Image (cartoon, rainbow, N blue to C red; front, side, top):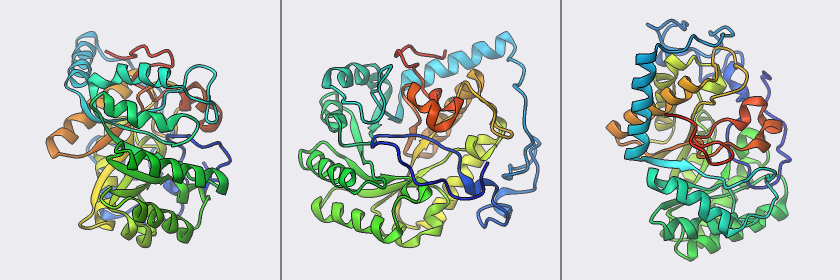
Length: 341
């Protein structure tokens, strides 16, 4: 994994999801190796420290009785419903830049609607601007994203689309950009200008920005500009073994809270892939994905945490962007079949 920031993202608007985070193993990174993370160990009795986990093999499957309990816990969690799901309606053969119709949005939203109270969208162009309206009609709350990248024309259309969606009453929160600073697509000043433009256009609508948790500490001016701080927390992409993933993700949230005192903070993305290659000590797997979902949902519910699971559906197009794990973060597969439980 590179220890330098990723190259500027040239993908079309509408991309959502995880990617390896370069700072995870950066030498001397201020976000790592502190007392907050405990001793440098990956044993079950100690806290995880990035860079301390060796490449791991696929763990043995659970015993039948344990697997049955996990299946039951997953089904019960999904039946109760969670706070939020990250939602993209892409079908097989579609990708960012494809034109998305209302019918497929409505069909896919109908699948997730019984299981979530919020949906998070990533784009307000190419038909995605219809998703918040349809979601509202189904009784869901909406975290509406404007996708920002290096193309200023696309950025302007995304901004206009987000403003139109919110003025129609279909946005409960607006997210201005997703991991823009992580990719290096915009400068801090450019990003703040976009946030302020949306805030000025939408008085009374909470507005914020989404990025990896450690960047809110590194960019206090961006943090200050947000009504809502939205933090992406992926233990997987820092090589954390699944068994230690929940406490490590909790430490990510704690760092965001320390960087944004008094701010409303929500976890805008977290999840675990069920297929693909291991990333250092983090191993994809069906049981790992199920357990991470169950554990996160139980903790978030007990603590009143606003969180969005990534993702609702598998997205086949993401293999090229994120390696073989990219297509396998969904609770439902690319054909909308529930994968677990």
